Image 1 (cartoon, rainbow, N blue to C red):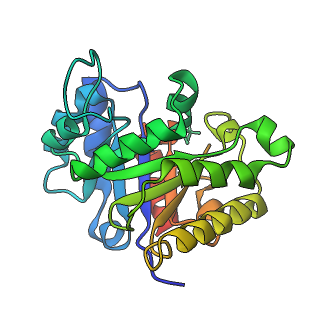
Image 2: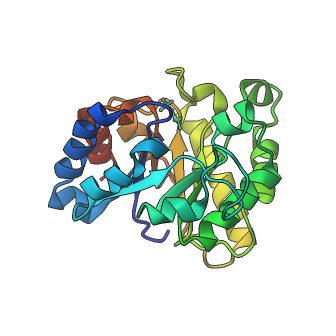
Length: 251
Ligand code: PEP
């Protein structure tokens, strides 16, 4: 298996005001040379903190990303933020298709794909999120759902340098529940095989993150699963000590 540099990504969701910048600073400063040699680390704060976050992270190993983008460059889309605007804040990444966007904002695979294309056009690396609901898992549809989401959400021509896939079972997000190591292994092996089939050469190198209730005490076990090349972390990314502990578990 190829040597893939892990990525540990934090999603602050709609949490974080200027007060939380001290945590961001602690993360940036806590990524010592040993960690920065081994892994990439990313925090996606709310858009309101994006520009100040990139200034804080400048010159440190920490990357900054946004949590969503619109699929158009600009225009009459009140309240929306384009990938160009995110790039203009000097951020390098954007999450697209997080389950909270798919569920609460009705985003379809087509919408997610358009956002992923816009991200690439703006020079951002897109972290494309997929995952089955609890009902889908109980019905034995997990791999079929993941296959549909990958086919529908990941744009043609994706390469490892511009695309990260995050597998996040919806029922594991923010619940404290995690799939078994065997279930994570099955999902990630499936995603890898799908990406290798579609993106010859590149699919083998694309980073596949696991997300859903990753904490310092379960990170090592989850991150040791084959084809898990890092983690996407919600709650535990808000505290520098927790986030850094997960980074260490990934090394
Ligand atoms: C997420 O929102 O991407 C996530 C994985 O959240 P949590 O770690 O809190 O489950």
